[in-house]
Length: 142
Image (cartoon, rainbow, N blue to C red; front, side, top):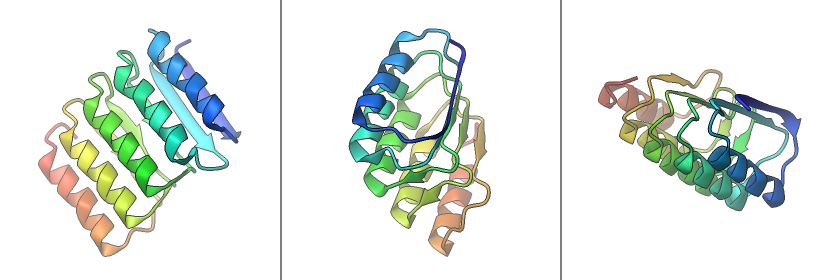
């Protein structure tokens, strides 16, 4: 398995645990694209984030058209910062609150491997735009 795309799915915690296992156990998985109908929720994202942290092969990660709540955004941010194989992250057309934007921006600032970030079509408040600008300025790999 090299690429996994889940489009307009509704996933619960049980599914999130299976995604965690795929991320950890599939050594060839290079791309995961999740376009979910509903939020994974905080616990579901925590499980997926654990898989992202442990994956040594994931290079591209997309959460387009997905709602990510604040705590879930923090889990995702921690995973992005910790993963050493990730080079592309897309959160375009993702629904984030200002605290979630701040968390993701900080996670990307800490990443030493991400080179490409897609954040298009979001409607950010001024603070969110400033966080993304600071991320681009401070992370020299992007």
